[in-house]
Length: 242
Ligand SMILES: C[S@@+](CC[C@H](N)C(=O)[O-])C[C@H]1O[C@@H](n2cnc3c(N)ncnc32)[C@H](O)[C@@H]1O
Image 1: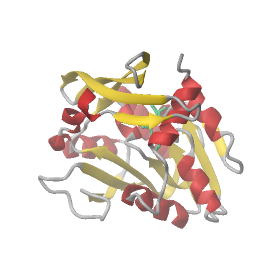
Image 2: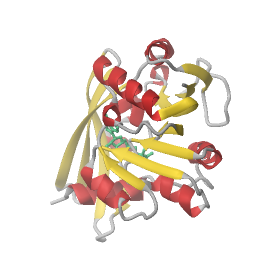
Image 3: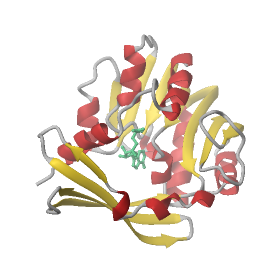
Image 4: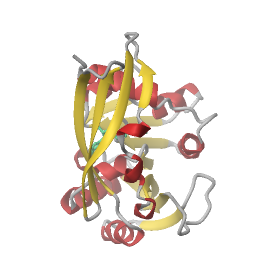
């Protein structure tokens, strides 16, 4: 068996937070370190905020995620407020300086209704002039075409099991892609299959939802070096201001 806790631990192994090596992690790390208070929405196992604390962030840091197993790991990290819930559940009215959704967590907001409710809650959690930073995969790059078993990852988990993890797309419907993630032993024995839907909003869709929620787009980039979005961009990195 491969439990939710095992899956959360494996996520950390497959996605280590490392601003020294990953340009995306560095992008967020700089924003977080420059902000007095930060709400990380879809914080997962909490690695980003923990890293900021370790690097001397003295302000208020809060993380929110609906995945209990991920949050259980986050709660092992001291000095940070952790809360269980979705973006739409964000109930802080303290006026954070910065809200983030990293690791493409924003794409978990699939329906129009959830997008509206989530953006409204994030907007309410920010101070006037506060910023919301997040990235989505640009639909033009069709990243899901690489999500197939031949691009799987081989990894040894904390229990010493040799594992293979791969993805398979089930459907592409409008801007929503549904796929499975399979975790198996090296001999092919399947331990777990998780199904996820992610939305790939285009620039216009993002602009409309953000404007309707009362956000102004301060900057939008096509990569982590802050280059403009072009027809080759794989990411839409947005900084929106309340
Ligand atoms: C790919 S993980 C990213 C985790 C972390 N932000 C990172 O950068 O490693 C996506 C996260 O979004 C969370 N999530 C899913 N639906 C959500 C929602 N409606 N509101 C907030 N977070 C959500 C998941 O539980 C998961 O932890």
